[in-house]
Amino acid sequence: MRTHILKTGYHYEFYSQLGSRLKSEKKMLQIEELKVEVGDKEILKNVNMEIPDGETHILFGPNGSGKTSLMMTLMGFSGYKVTHGKIVFKGEDITYMPIYERARLGMGVLFQRPPTINGLKTRSMVEICGRGKSADVETLAKQLNFSDFLDRDVNHNFSGGEIKRSELLQLTAQQPDMVLLDEPESGVDLESIVLVGDTINALLHRGVKHSKGKPHKEANGTKSALVITHTGHILDYITADRGQVLYSGALCCSRNAREILKWIREYGYEECVRCSM
Image 1 (spheres, one colour):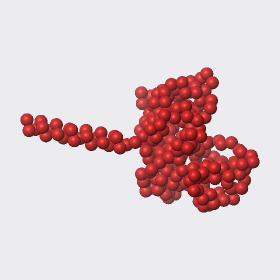
Image 2: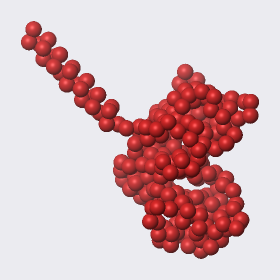
Image 3: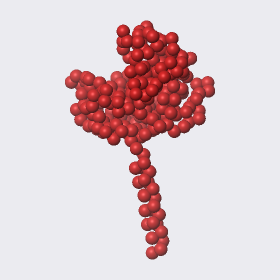
Image 4: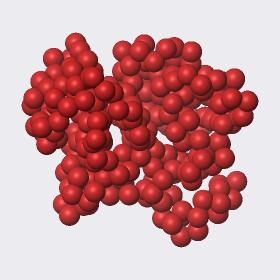
């Protein structure tokens, strides 16, 4: 009888602690059974995803798998019709919320191919992004070696690396709680990729520095991110808590990001999907 009571007490304490831990793990982003159409074609199929506060998740997938479509849907861009499911950000249902309200709530995005905006200076764009955040544009630009570009039109004749630094400058001014990064390593040369990685880590409050392209000194962040990648190269410059694979519009794998990348490199996406079934 005494043994039974002890065991019962142990189990009660264990589950109480487990429940407390689960309650304390707040979700920055929750996606539930999300289906999305572009035109008349279903692009995303029953996508379920959770990203807790302070975690960075990597989203792998081949070209055309729906990665960018997911990001555009999360940010609320037109042309991406949610036909089922919902998106919850910081506890609030944002499924049908307009872009500017999502941005005000604390969601930011780095585009893979942002448009050129003729007539709008980069300085003004950064000031708009940092409105209400007391952002020092000159100081932020200096940190990204971008001071010489502030008085040029947004993305006009910028190289791939310059576009990424422009996007990161805007995000740094905005200071969002949730960052969506679409292929941040795309079009960036080897010299700039370390700066891009360090800026992302600083933006996420990860406190990670690099030595010869390898990240070290991991630290818990206070902001969350979903990083889209096709090559996985960005993992050499930022830290990630989890990886997931999007294949043909459906999530099919969720585990350590480096393990997923290693599997994809050795066996390809189709084998990765087959293994997760």
